[in-house]
Structure formats: structure tokens, C-alpha cells
Amino acid sequence: MWSRFMIVSFWGVRGSIPVPGKSTIRYGGNTPCVTIEQDDTLIIIDCGTGLRVLGQKLFAESGGDPIKAHILISHTHWDHIQGFPFFTPAFIPKNSFTIYGAKGVNRQIEDTLAGQMESPYFPVALEAMAATLSFEAIDEQTFTIGNLEIETYNLNHPGNALGFRINGVDGSMVYISDHEPFYRLTTTALAGGEDDQEKIDFAKSRDSAYTDFIKGADLLIEDSPYTKDEYTSRAGWGHACIDDVVEIAL
Image 1 (tube, rainbow, N blue to C red):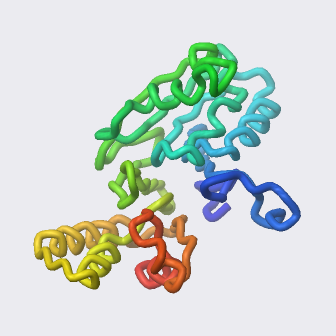
Image 2 (image 1 turned 30 degrees about the vertical axis):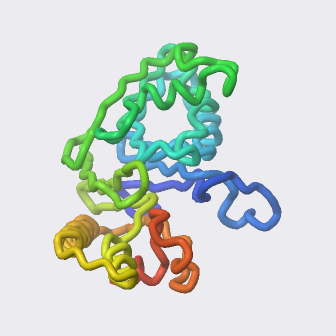
């Protein structure tokens, strides 16, 4: 809890694959899933394996009452959606979920979620989910959910991804899943002998927009798996190093 008006909970924080075991007990081994609660509004960000644990809790605490939530999916790489087929509340008829995914990708969010549940990958089809599921395609825009204002930002990650800023009455939080600063790629290109002023200007513009997007937030949640040395061999993978995140945040 970071505000008496908004509750943020982590159900999964890992990337690529779930990693349960003794070495991951402190932060857990599930892939990304975060919830934001304010009054009667429940927002779920990403559907990694942590979604299964969240679903069990929601089901146990519902007392038979309908469960309603809004699900924001940053992008559809597997670690961000692999918990969805195991989300128990989605199989209960009286429950309802609005699911938001990025525009401009090869497949709509509904098709992607259905695809990972097709045979031979999974024995239960999306159509077997008896809850009311609504799907919304979103881009860089602002909209409201309950009393919360949602802003989105197009991240720098292969296949496209969205960052989310959630503004409440008493504070704001930003969720940046997988993102690589644009200037990092520009610097790498220049080191390789490329000189494209248009790319440089674009990188500066997007990085400036990113700084504005996170400015003034009370809480920043951002993917940053690398040190500067580790980043060298991973440029272009769509992830930041911790030094970049700390520098921009401060």
C-alpha cells in the first residue's frame, strides 16, 4: 500500500519464464501481474503467471458476488499473458472483465489470447470462459476507469508495448513493463558508423515524451534487468539498465 486511497499489489515480477524455488522466495517466481485498487475499482496490469494466484484470491474472497475488473495488457509476449488461461474468475458466468490491448500489432488482443488457448497448446478454448469478456484496442491516449484516469505511452520494445500511468485523487503511479530508452539504440547505431539525424531527433522526441509521462508520479514500476556492462551485449532487446531508470527517475 502506498496511499490510503490507492492500493498497489504485486502478484508476479519475473520476466521471460516463471522461476519458483528457494532462490526466488523473497520476491516470488511468477511472471508479471500487478493490481491497483481504489474504492470499488479493480485494475489488473498484465496477465503473467501471477494472475493465477490473484484469481484464486478473488474467487475465495468474492463470497459468491460478481467479480468485475479492468485488465490492461502491456504487450502479448508470453510472460505477460501466460497466466490468463488459469484465471479462475474468467470461467464464472456472472463475472465481467474488460481487457485492453495495444492497437497496431499483427493480431488483436482477443485473437492472441484465444490463440494461446487453441489445441494443441491448451485443452480449454477461450470460448469456454463463461464470464463476460470485452476487448478494447488502445493507443497513446487518455481514458477513465471509475475515478481513475489512465494515460498510455508507446514503449520501445519489439512487437510494440504500452506503458500505463494511473492518476487518482491522491496520487499517481506509472507501470513500464519492457522498455529500452530510444537514445540507447541511437548511441549504438552511431558507434557502428551510422549517422541518421532523423533517427536521432526521433529518439530525443520519444525520450522527452517518456520523461514527461513519468514526471511527478508517486510510484514508478519499471523493468530494468541489466547493469550497463550487461546491456552492451543486449542492445535492441527492448529492456533498460538500472542506471538509466534511476537517472531519469531522479
